[in-house]
Length: 559
Image (cartoon, rainbow, N blue to C red):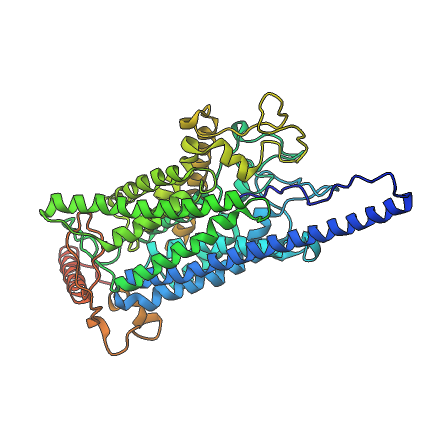
């Protein structure tokens, strides 16, 4: 996320010899007033651009809802929908009271320059003392940053769907938005943060490895954070009942509506045009960077969806002897490409976005396979999409970020606008040039900074979220009871089935797609609730028999 600011607009006037001193003073006053008016217009344009981008990002929650409902079985549709709503509400609660303060609450010196803590912000709790008026108004930034916090939170809902308690999920969303997520964003997006390329003030002169990490719109700060939290939650809550049989068989548990899934993917793709270009946080003077971000946000998901589909179709051809084209793989491949391009959308050329997209599609398939092997039961493949490809996005700028595009988006290494010589002529330029991708001639420092930033996110998120979910598990409030999960959480907790009159026999009108090498529910949307319920009943009967045998061999002592 860039916050470099172009020089304030002004005017140049060369007085003629025929003007008196009074005339010159009058002209000077007029120019000053016009400059102030232009500054106000600039601030208004910036606020309008950022707010409209925030609205698009928030609209992405409609996409998350559609994908999530489509990917779960019918008796859990209300449950996953209310988790998406809970994210919007609980994340606003957490981000209002502490989140924004921890992320961007830097102290300011007398000149307005940031002067704060390298690890955490210390001002603006509950928005206290945040500038609300004039050209220094920061309210629009809170709205934009909150929409990102809510996005990071909602990633986890899909990974723990069909068995998480609503109460525990509310606690998680507040904790994520109020503590875990803001610390990462402070490190990379605050001018006082220790990791980011924006770090360059009187009080924070040294960037990470002399360069600073690039995470323009949040492959790491949003998607890796959410994806790693999803992995922690999925590990602690355990698989759905019947997903893995005692003999190791992986039982397919497909979602029920592919139409909702595809609609959700397209809504998310649309919303990403606010997520990525909007992260420039300014309009005037940055049209080139914004346009490049829009182009790369188009190409990466396009090529990722085709790459993911090609890999999965080839696997199906080898394993089954016939070609099949999996809708969930293609949709999640597109999302993987969007996640992967988010960090570098303004700093790589279009060909770089194509490369990133192709890699993301392949990594998605690998990540999905790993989740199955590790018994991370993730109905939406959120871990493969967000954690794995968030990592791809974080590392990619170290290889292929362009020096010219970095400087177009972030400015030159000196962001105090005090460079006076020609920035295109290195022999006379007194503005330091940015380091860039090692495949394009960079010295590797940027790649090193990206790797350190990657490791920091994994360590911070898992270090917080594993203990958090473990405590909820010990308290007995992480997961619903087995009998209620088997019946369906909609019936147990949310007032009844999402499709009244249909029950478990709801027919989505979509037939089951063929071939699934990973044992995932990729593309297998259809009327499978009966078979799922049969397998669950079978496993429960086996567990009862095992328990009776144990009790027979180890009778309880008589009182």
